[in-house]
Image 1 (spheres, helix red, strand yellow):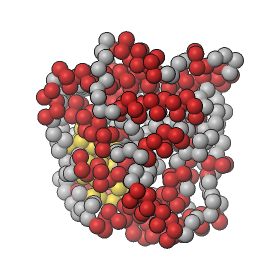
Image 2 (cartoon, rainbow, N blue to C red):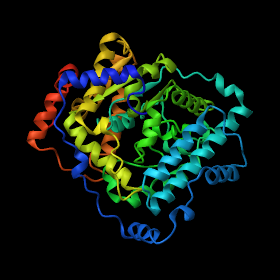
Image 3 (cartoon, rainbow, N blue to C red):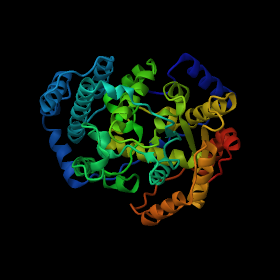
Length: 442
């Protein structure tokens, strides 16, 4: 799922850019510099350059499928057209992503796991067709841009016992489906925790950018991998040919996969509402509402200048996990460059105005308001969404934040835009900031 999935969307974005005037070419990627790798990672990658990495860590179709089948004892991957996307993806990774040896190791581990997930989910539905009858009722979806406070909002809202969230361990290992009686003691929790924290060890600076843990709630992207039709991969690898392939696809099958995943997870453990977070779907809200017509949408907003600086820092680090050329494919123009993000803002404003985002089903949350008064901001959000509020929600939010003060994982300082660059971009974002009342941070 990349930006501009239809001719209509592409036309709208082009017109918006022309109407607002093109921003000066200010590309934060050009000045981004990665932190030095830990010695052990640098040594692995250096040794890998001496050998045939592709033979040592194969990423071909036959090898990946065979490992998944052998590990699970299953063979039915389902027939929803996934294999075409999988093939385009692994070819793009092999030919374009410029993986180092550590990158190949991480990628093989991940892809075998995604394929195992497909096999196990297909098997669960085959043995228990009644799972399909599950209903996802009024899910609450946080769909703001990344780096606008979506993670901390997701975490504090997850303290409300009415919300069911997807935690890291069940996103990684959804089968067998979690059960309420053992949800907090499932043996998959420490396994997921140990596996995901390898990324903290590969890039220690990551701990100051984003918290990883087996029991933490995760965004929906973490269980879209096994669809093989998602721009979550564009946020992981420099793969322009796969991005071009995605631009021609309908996102509906991926949203259906998302729904299939949630039905499985709630089969034996459900609550009043799902609480979900998926910034990569911000451009696809109308399509999302086709599958989840009663969804409650939360849009988070933050100074887009600050968001741009932080976004490049985070994405550069993610690419750096796997390659020595983190921006070599020129990916993510639509989120790195001001014009691309302004086009997304234009979509949100239009959907607010034309009724796609209806009153009672959408709430706009300002990052600045949340940081100043978390319980009060959430209470207003609940009112906008028609959700009941009680004092216990505010108490749980305050207790959670007191136990996890800002900066508890360290602070990562990134270079900001120059005053001249800020002025140029500020003009591009003025309509959006005025429409939603987004304050400047710098």
